Image (cartoon, rainbow, N blue to C red; front, side):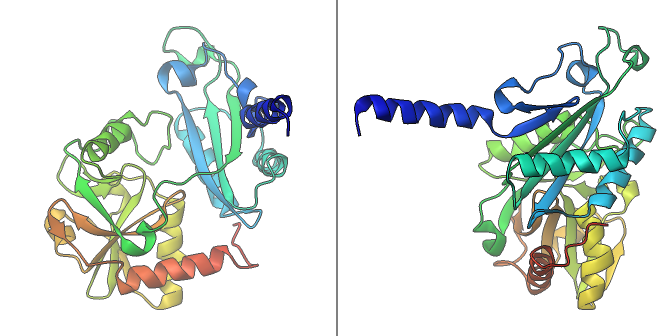
Length: 309
């Protein structure tokens, strides 16, 4: 192969990389290099908007209806009018999945307040923006899913429910990001966040569970958490199928440190064991109940009967 041919191939590869993924932005399918929003969009100026992270398994959208329900609940709580119907949103997602030839991957839906002025008033934005990205995501290295991971307790607490309802999956994730930075500064990947009353809330982007004497326990919504779709799937589907008792209640760090097992759940994270929190060793590796839940989860999402409700 000549040098000129090699340079041409390299140029074409680089150009293709800038074109993928193909992104839906306000009615248009655009290559990554051209996908952009107006600098006066309140989503950019103030973090004024909402989003959903959704998994694709085998070309199907996992728990699609649950994600749509949560997206529209969040819109209602923020007085944000989504300019397309749930049916049209699902069509947009499927179009993005097809355009990017994704079999197993991740969808990020972003609804911005839209273009307005430099004031805070959201009602100067006549039409909300709609963005759909279908791509890949990996939060944690594959080996940690059997080995388990170490985390720390964040010094930064969750924003109180009275200040910003965490059930709203808003574009303002700075509280979570600054907690995540605490972990990164210590060479780790995740944290456990407490609420301002000292109760365990959640991770920077995951829900927290622990196991004690065969029972799976996770914080309730009033602890200040996002009600995760995977969290719900564990509580309402996986635990009952395995005959594992599950409950939601408030608890503090002493119970978490004394747990038999700890694990995190999330759309991007799926189910992953935590083996150490700060200096407290929880288990030498993934515990038996965590393993059962993760195995069943993988069986379900790789089956022909993927739940899309």
